[in-house]
Amino acid sequence: MGFIRGLVLITGLVVLVASGFIAFTGNEFIHPLIWWMVGFFVFVTGFAHYVAHMGLKHDQEHLHAYYYASMGVRMVFVIIAIFIYRYFNEERVIQFVFNFFVLYFIYTGFEIYSLLSNLRQNSKKQI
Image (cartoon, rainbow, N blue to C red; front, side, top):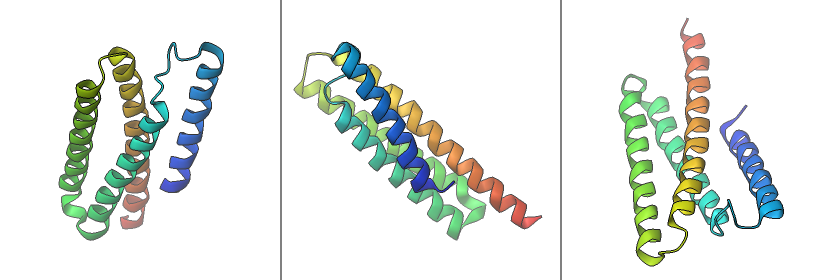
């Protein structure tokens, strides 16, 4: 499965689950800014995948440096987003952080799965 297709699939699943929670519980579990968070993670995941993919394409021996750089950039973006929210809003901080990190782990897991499947295909080509 291609990265874009998988990203659309995982985002659709997240949107369905979030919409279900909102429909049945209101904003009790899901923060009102969830859609901004999903958009943020789609952007950050796409960017991190692009950096790692460029490393795989151009310099396979140093792929780990590209991958760690993309994860570092992702972590900096996440920390900045949380601090910006905390600075401007004092309400529902725990709910925001919980929702934010659930999305962080979902999209990071997807990115790792996508990268490993790509590496698996490349290692089979070398044998």
